[in-house]
Structure formats: C-alpha cells, structure tokens
Image 1: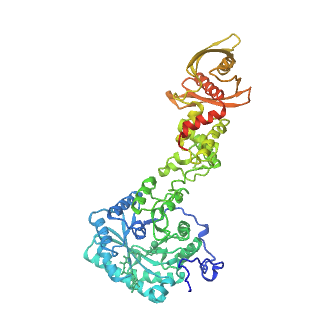
Image 2: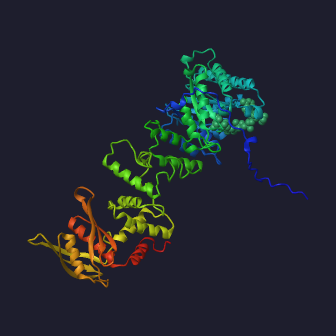
Length: 601
Ligand SMILES: CC(=O)SCCNC(=O)CCNC(=O)[C@H](O)C(C)(C)COP(=O)(O)OP(=O)(O)OC[C@H]1O[C@@H](n2cnc3c(N)ncnc32)[C@H](O)[C@@H]1OP(=O)(O)O
Ligand SMILES: CC(C)C(=O)C(=O)O
Ligand SMILES: [Mg+2]
C-alpha cells in the first residue's frame, strides 16, 4: 500500500535558483544616497497601536493601549497611528475614547488607517470626528504579486481604485470642514508593498493620488500629502530600498508638496538599515514600532533607529532616557519580551563577560575618569549607558571566560579598592577557581564575598593574626622599632622587631615569633607594597596592599587592609598577608569557596 509523504517533509533544495528569483534592482547608476549622512531627526510616527497591535497574539486591551499611548507621548511622539477604527467596535471605541476624553495633546496628530474601501473610509471618519489633528491614512496594494493574485487588477485598475478612494477621503474632509468641525487634516497614502512594486508604476500611482487629492487647489496653501512607502515585506538588501526611495523622490511630481515617509519591516533582519539608508536617500519621515513589534519579524525598531542617531551626535528628538520604562510598558502590553541582545535595550548589551573586553572597558573608564569633557569613546561601549537610564553595574559580569581586569573592576565598584596591577592575577585565580567549580556566572556579590574572605577584609573577617595594639620608636640611626600585641587565633602575643619602616619592623617582629598559632616556621619578606586614598573629604581612608614572599618556600601571598590611619592600614595589610601565608594554599581555597558558595554547587 502506498504511503503519502508527511506534510512537513523537508524540501531543502541544493539549487534554490529555480524556486526563488533574485530581486530585480532599480536601475539607478547615478544614485547619490551613499554619500549622504543623517544630520537631523525625521518626523517620527509610531505604529505601535496599529501595525504593532494588529500582529499580537492577543491584541491589547483598552487599558494596555492607553498605557502605550501615554508612553509614546512621554517619549515625545507627535504622530501616533492609534488604530484602525473600521476594524471592530473595540478599535472604534478606543479611538473615540481618545477624542472624547481629550487624551491627545494639541500638538499631537492622531493617525488612523483605513483600506481603500468606501464604507470603511466612512466608518473611519466617524471614528475620528471632532479630533483636533488627524492623519487619515489610506492604503491599497500596488505590487504585482497583489495585483495578480489578490485583486486580479491591472496597473491602471489599481490606479483607478486608489484615485476613486482618494476622492472619497477628500469628500469626507470637505464635508467635515463644511460642517464646521474643528479638525486639522493631513492625508497619508501608502502604496502597499511599495518595495515590491515597479518603481515607475509606484510613481505614476502616487502622482495620480496627488492629483486627485489636490484637485483644483493651490498646493502651496495645503498641508503636504504624506506618501508612505512601505517595505511591507522586506525582500532585498537595504541598498535596494534606498535606491527605490531616491528614485521616488527624484521622479514624483512637486516633491516640495509631499512628505516621503518610510515604513520598513524586518523580514531579512535589515529593517533598521533600510530605514537609515532610506533617510539618506531623501525621506522625511519614519513609521515604526518600539522594539520592532509588528507583523512577522516586526516593523522597524524605532528605539534602535533613534539611539543609532543619538550615538552619531544627532538628536533624534525623541526621549529614551528611561529605556527601562519603555521596555517595561511595551513588554507588559505586547506580551513579547525584548531579546537580551536587542540593540541598545537588551538586558545583555552593556555586559562584557569576556576577559579582554572587560580589561579594555575598565581601562576606558579609567581614561574617562581623568577627563570626562572629551566626546564619548570607550572600547566596546558605543553609548554611555547612563544616557538611557542604565547603570554601569551590569557592564562587567564574570564567568569562566572573564579576566582579571573585569574582576578588578567589580572589586573597585563594590569596595572602592583599586587593586595593584600585580595583585590582580592572584585574586583572579581565586575567582576563576570558584567560577570553574560552579560553572556559572559569579555575581558582583560573590566577588565581594570572595575578596573579603581571601584578604580578611572587613571587621567580620579575622585571619590568623589581627592587630591589637602597637607603638613605634625611632632610633638615632632612623630605624623603627615595632612593639605591639597581635591576636593569634584568640591568644594575645607580644612581639617586637626592627626595620627601616613600619612594615619591615612588623615583619621582623613576626618572623621572630614563628612558629605561632600552630603554623610552621615561615620567613616572610616584602615583595610589593602600594597604597592609595579611599574616598574623599573627611571620610578619606588609606588602602594598603602588600605582597609577602615566604623565602622558605617561595610562595607569594597578598594582603589588603584599609584604615583612617595610613600606618595602621599598612600593618593590617601585612597581617592579612601573613594570615594567608600561615595556611597552606589548598586549605585557603576551600575556606574561601566555602565562604562564597557554601552548599550552592
Ligand atoms: C500591510 C498592512 O498592515 S495593511 C493593514 C492590515 N490590517 C488589518 O487588516 C487589520 C484590520 N482589518 C480588519 O479588521 C478587516 O480586515 C476589515 C474589517 C478591515 C475588513 O474585513 P473584511 O471585510 O472581512 O475583509 P478582508 O479583510 O477579509 O478583506 C478581503 C476582501 O476585501 C477586498 N478588498 C480589499 N481591498 C479592497 C478595496 N479597496 N475595494 C474593494 N474590495 C477590497 C478583497 O478583495 C477581499 O474581497 P473578497 O472577500 O471578495 O475576496
Ligand atoms: C498599511 C501599510 C503602511 C503597512 O503597514 C505596510 O505596508 O506594511
Ligand atoms: Mg506594516
């Protein structure tokens, strides 16, 4: 018995060239857009509540729409496509509520979409009655794939359909004016699937629409018509879209009386690039959605577009200083998360896990601290996270791919300690061992805990030796004599020693006292010493770092401490290092691991 192939059988083709044809480019050898730059913000129109909303699994409730609408106002949008009033009673009432409850500020244009269908246009006009500012947006499909397969229309029939409905829109506007309605009107026309439409036909169609719209009027006294040129489905590389826009701008009649608007989708992942190149090609206006919501792969992401502009030093004239709030509102209302790696807004986009990135960022911040008046330039960070309301906290996160620079950066952020370069590898080894053991990210908190445990840093972290009291005497030869008491595992021990300075005098005393607290004989000498101020003003403290080497074994250990008194900080740092020297390396690692991860592994 014959069996039929499963419906989902793969049809991957070794040679797809018969099934899929390459995009036919516009012939525009003298294109000028590649040499242009984006030097000012376009007019922005949000379509979150229309194109974004129509593509949601669960379209927004009225309350959610209102939340998004308010957010858009807060971000500074002046043109908001709020819906499709003829689609349903809910959509209609939503638009009515915005108007009747006076929710739209006087400088904001309420945009509504209608297909080129007489009864739906009339319903749309009923929907926007008494609004202050309305952009009446009408579309019909123009591309051959729609003409042939959906409507069975020729080019001329497509033009006729558009013109007929433009006249209906005009009649409705005239009727509203005649009635004395207070509304200001703009007309927007979209030849749907513009980017798949023959460029010369798109121009002819729009010329006919323009003629019908302005018929018998002096264009100079009219608001310009908006020609919105959608890449309804993105089917080619973005340079093709730019060519189409430049071609349109060059060939459309009376360019000065029209606004060229872009409306890109992201099917190939280049919606942002297409809009940017489209602006370079001469467009004036951009439609899209926050975080790229919308049909299929979404509309162009307006946050990305605006912040791309911002980081080129061009004000987008939109305010995304509180990006967290935008993310919160849009994700809650659309039920679609922002990808962790989405440009600018993703949770991970300011985070460096890898060692060489962390090292470069840390150094970049160091540079900037010295002179913050220079233009922003930090490796791997094309924007200052603070400008969009993000903190630096997430900039460096540590896993097993991280390096010493990143770890040192986190210690600096949490404890203010600027670890000496030579000390960084030692503490990094500690963190690396923990991170390999857990095979997970090590949080900033974990790193702080590990640091405190490793160097007995902080009052609750006592090493083998702690300083109880001390004094110094200076001899005639300038030598210092340390006399003091140290606590060794709970027992006080009096020690005395000489040296060129406080550190060497304490070490001399310690070396004399070995073995103490059950530890073996050691002979410690100073290999590295450094200190820096911690904090400022009356709260300033000294941070001291010392590396001791045990000359009996060659093992080197670090110690750290801080105090309001420089000498005390250095003595405590010596005892921190000596406490490390007193315990063998293996045991120290397991003590530290215990303190940081306990039973978490
Ligand atoms: C690219 C874009 O995003 S365009 C915007 C798309 N957004 C939406 O569609 C969301 C809102 N839409 C809706 O709620 C509905 O589609 C409505 C209410 C507008 C219309 O619904 P319906 O009347 O059921 O029609 P439907 O959407 O299925 O449209 C298909 C019919 O309209 C016809 N049609 C489309 N445009 C026109 C036109 N300008 N003149 C006459 N008929 C038209 C189609 O040929 C088709 O006719 P057929 O059923 O005889 O084959
Ligand atoms: C209605 C039009 C502008 C549209 O959304 C599209 O073509 O993508
Ligand atoms: Mg669209």
